[in-house]
Length: 228
Image (cartoon, rainbow, N blue to C red; front, side):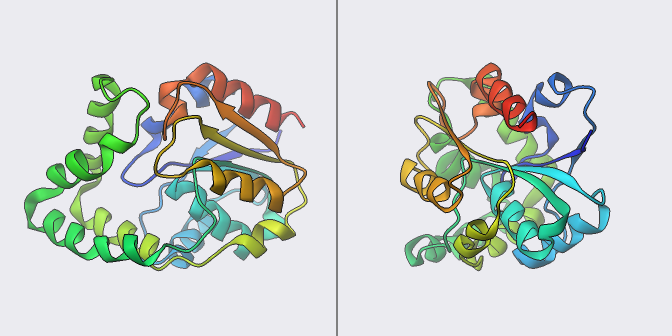
């Protein structure tokens, strides 16, 4: 059974996947965090050094962007690809312009403020889901401001990966929360067009983090993809 490499979103760790890894047993699950380097290329290369020889690959948000770079660097090693709540395009200038002030505040001791006020409120379909919001804050604090800086720079300077996806012919899943604001539906429709063999799944009553907001539906979609 092919092992599965999971890459979480920005300022998240393996806890972002909730109970999904256990639900996929007995498949071997490898958690890969994009922590080394300040570019997508460097982060992907570091993960590839530790990854199995051949694997299924799933990433959410920034994790999906890193997954696309892994696919670009090592297409022969990726058996199947799942992209959740992510974006294949380069970052637009207005978002790029927000990165430096956010980094400055985070490095000056304001990581909590940046995450709480500018990022996390946009993540969930239900902004009153305090348990999930608290988990997101705890993951961000555990990673710290230096990781925030490196991940922000990698996101800011990332390349467009549309050609990478168009070349992929293996089993694929494009999944999004119905109410995802950071990565809207048109980005997922684009990925589905680039990979016409992909399953396109919209998870109801979920925002940017379906593995935590709607774990049953997300697990079902991942199992279907892994069994293709």
